[in-house]
Length: 291
Image (cartoon, rainbow, N blue to C red; front, side):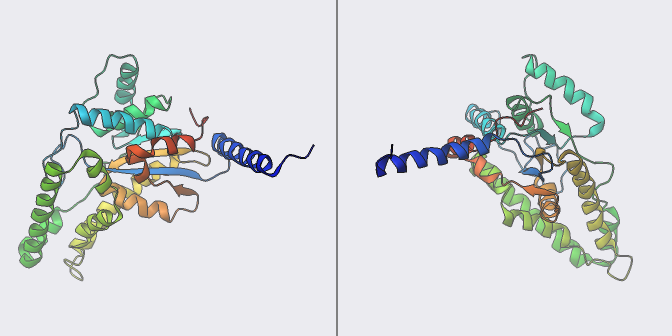
């Protein structure tokens, strides 16, 4: 029997919807590129180790806790097979134990993004915990740069210090006036990524042709991030879906490395940061990408 035109249109539309939902629920083929969602962060409990220091919004306030719980639901809808956090692999056993205690209701999440986002997402996604991917054995070796500027280039020293003060003031203002979702959007904004990298490159020419103190300092920071990206690559094997949380100074560089990686693809976190996208994201997420 031939259906009337309106019914045929409705029937075709239904088939199309079913095919979209089936495709979303299908796990990635084993040989598909790894998918990586990098999430730039400011440190929820600022330890004061960064060059730029600022006050930090209270993420433990009830409204922010509610937002972080809802954010974890949306990020888990991405279907991560792994959640990476900016912690030392040497401490992996400690984080594994704390995650087991958290699942059992015996561990209250401290004011730290590894716990407040990483643990929440891992639990919602049905994972066994978070994976530490930091590499603090190498870092920004800036002391020779500072010593060179002190002795030979006071103008560069004054310029750099003024820039640090300006950035710190901007961060204080943002932390005092913006909401947590707005701050997370800033931490994942491409223009903010560019400004972060520019801060390190600002002194790159110091000592050019005379020991290259500036270029060596810049290279040391990229060195650490290359190592962190190697850890990320090991997790983001073909068919895997990885969420990686890192300070925005790291993710600004990791995004560049990911963009040039022909075996992995990037997933933009910014749509997931907004509450109103919850239903849309959940509808398009794979249902079986779990450990």
